Length: 96
Image (cartoon, rainbow, N blue to C red; front, side, top):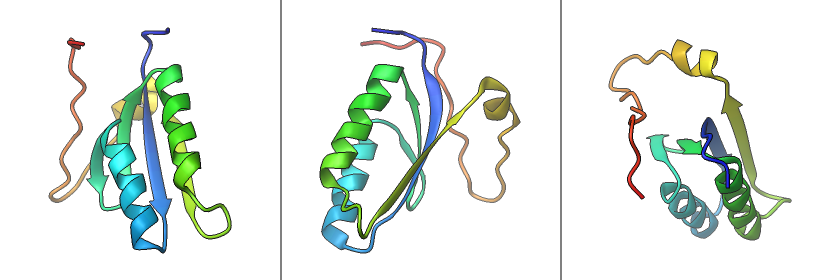
């Protein structure tokens, strides 16, 4: 398993409460909620694939929309926030 982690921004628009709550619960296990339907996740390739598979088991393709954007290091460094936005801090050390 790779130790290299990339920052991903995952957004969703899901009209049904039940599925929306399930998707949010899955994402909370992988990252930080930064807006109501926006999460930032620091993931290895394997973790992203596992997350995407879990989401695929819940999402209804004909009604829901989920998008994932992987950010390069330069994009992460450029990220800016305004207002009450809390910066997601990446720890230097991970304890498993």
